[in-house]
Length: 103
Image (cartoon, rainbow, N blue to C red; front, side, top):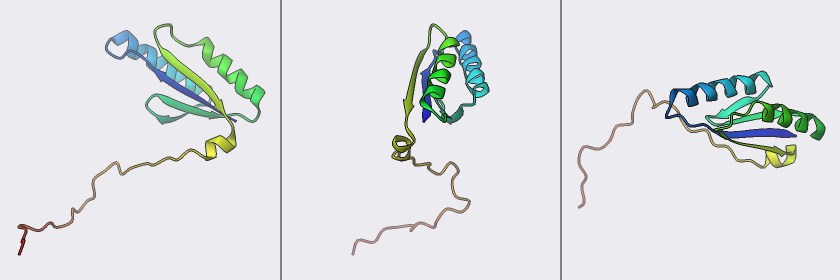
């Protein structure tokens, strides 16, 4: 069983950014791993254990935030397709043709 936390905090003000940082630290203390900016995942051995972690996360949710907690089974999680693109440009770009000849 996996517990997925998807969240969004208002980042236009300093207090929103601080609340998000505090929420992320609490998620990491609970054993969640970052998937991307607003998405964290934690593995739970049983459904009861997953419910316990969802309750713990629900206790430190900020009132002005949007948080979605969902539980998915290992089989459902194995069906997720993930693509991680290249983050850095290649060191040497391929040579391109200077002019194009049509005839």
